[in-house]
Image 1 (tube, rainbow, N blue to C red):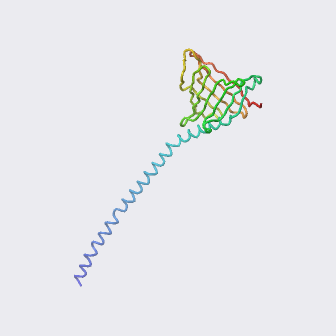
Image 2 (cartoon, one colour):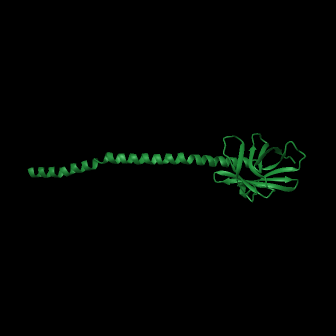
Image 3 (cartoon, one colour):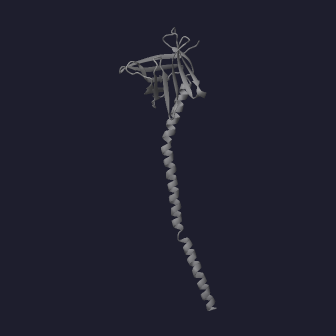
Length: 201
């Protein structure tokens, strides 16, 4: 019997040691799991924080282009009903670009095409003088106002030609457009505005 007791004690000691061995790292494992969870949450929060502004800008550009989609149709100068000038907006390229076409009677005069450029908008103006300025949309908190500023141009002789450097649309009033453009020639800027209404003919 004593031998059996000693054998029993000997057999129980490793068992207790094994339990202690298994239980000792438990707080360490819990701590490691908590740290991993904290790290994962931090990375997720950082991803949301850094990506949100990009989505906000992208959504703003999409909304601005959608505003221009609402201009589809033919417009005339409100204060010059007898003028042959008409400005016609239409969609092309599967609805991804807005075309602004100036007509004098049935004769094409000039063309401006608006489309997405990543998180922004680009307006390319095809001028009768033969140059093609590109203007970039300027994000703004102003409601119903779109502004574009000169980025660059192709086939431009800035010494002898005037060229478009700024363009703005005020869409504050339904059925009306205030279109303002700025042309530059020899370093001097000339600003002009037109009040447009839909042509009923």
